[in-house]
Image (cartoon, rainbow, N blue to C red; front, side):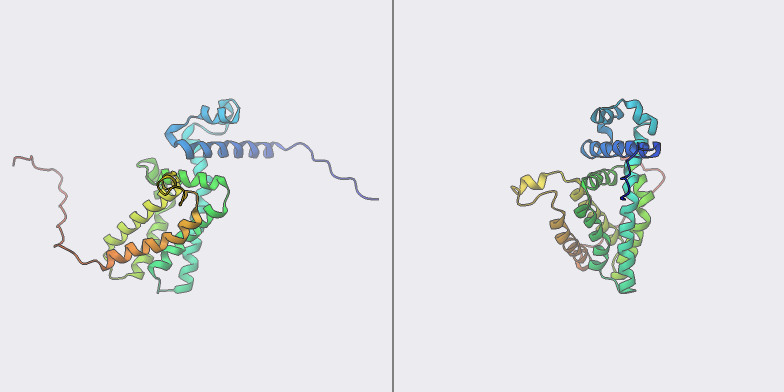
Length: 245
């Protein structure tokens, strides 16, 4: 005699809590990605969900705590993907990295997350772009989660170009990071400029071109010939003189 099918019971409190938290974070993630940290309130999230704001306050002590939870839910995986990419690349090439190889190890896997992930990951990408370009709280989060990884990246770039000016390498990373976060922002501007020839959501097209373009910038700085003597850097002093002295 066949066993009777099991009847699904009511969800446990832990399951109900997990479902509520996920829905709150998903909704907040979507709104933060569209309007930014300062563009929404706890009430906006509650209204979007059709619940009372008190339910969100039950789980999160204000908007900052909610934003932190949204960011931290995915950021650790983003760090792990890049770390794994650099680990695998270093194991393959040892002490002989190239600029192209280093940048691909760092960025290709990151783009794959947005290519293969769900809409929530693309929302997170916009939030990541906001954080990376924000002074104060944004800089603090990047310091916490990404600075050690970025310094490891810079170390590999120095191995690839041991006689390069370190200042050029840091500026090159700055330019590359800025371009990357512009891509994640998906503003739609390139869609309009190109008359839909290019679209902001086409991460595959970006992935195919991004590193090649950036390597060109690294190479151009490395191989450039100075057109004029280097400008001496201003010395920092504790107090500046009045302009008429």
